[in-house]
Length: 169
Image 1 (cartoon, rainbow, N blue to C red):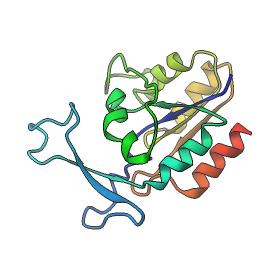
Image 2 (cartoon, helix red, strand yellow):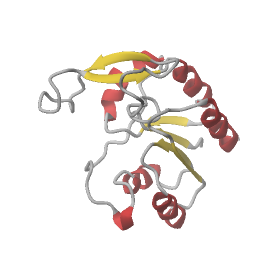
Image 3 (cartoon, rainbow, N blue to C red):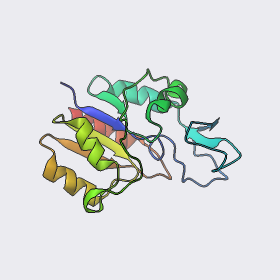
Image 4 (cartoon, rainbow, N blue to C red):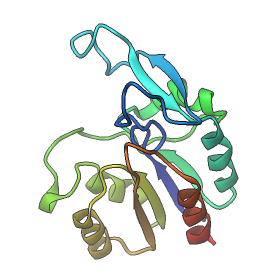
């Protein structure tokens, strides 16, 4: 069975923290209104920067991984993000609770990532992974893991895709 590749959207695919006045090179701007983006947050649609080349890079990894959304967008990543990247509908982690308390100072997603993965090996790309998450996963997960923290100002880069391919090999 192939390892999972758990994919966060905001940070890895959408470098939301890049300087707002300048779109990152290679990215295009999209305006979106996913369910979670309410008028309370902003009257304007959400600005999302996407690099269309990332879709091909992820599809190239699909030979070695089962691709899974691990994002607060949940299934809406299939409607709002995937089509812009040329990705098919992917399974997604359906978080039981979002932004809640987490064990031992870990990121709130970490405990649910472990539940979702079961005993399968997995790689996880997210902008909120810390050393605490790595330690927590190392102590509790029986299979190989790769937790990659992606800079939310830059997003995924060539070296990240290479590292994911090398790890799967």
